[in-house]
Length: 168
Image 1 (cartoon, helix red, strand yellow):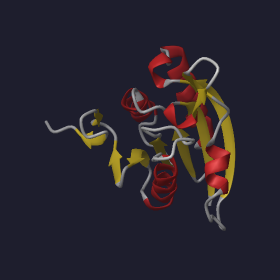
Image 2: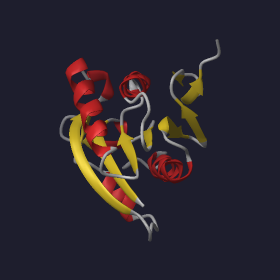
Image 3: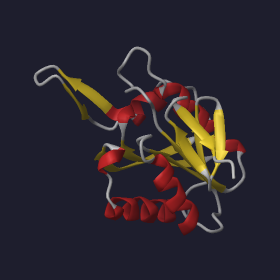
């Protein structure tokens, strides 16, 4: 199976800078995470598109993400988008609108805590997202914290620190 992973930054890629005591988006971390997993029958390619906190993403950035995914769905069996959780729902909705009938599964994931932190959820979320890429039918999804939810109507549950499906 061919999976294209598009990195946009987000908390998952943040590192702590001891010099200024702040968190910054570091180098893309996805290859390190995937390198720790046993994935014998996956052919993974990477596109390090952006290195931004999702709160800093603009409409232009979201257009770039949509265009990158539109190109990737023509070249892969599934697409995984690594994204910050604060505005993941906005990008997911944009992808859902742009990919009205996606030929493959598109999954967004991220982390509530940076990969380099001790209690990170990064590896779990990436693993779940890769499994969703393999088993979910074509569509746009978020995979995090033991849930796979299909767009539209997915929102961040800030109290529960996860994602939920909006009820009408």
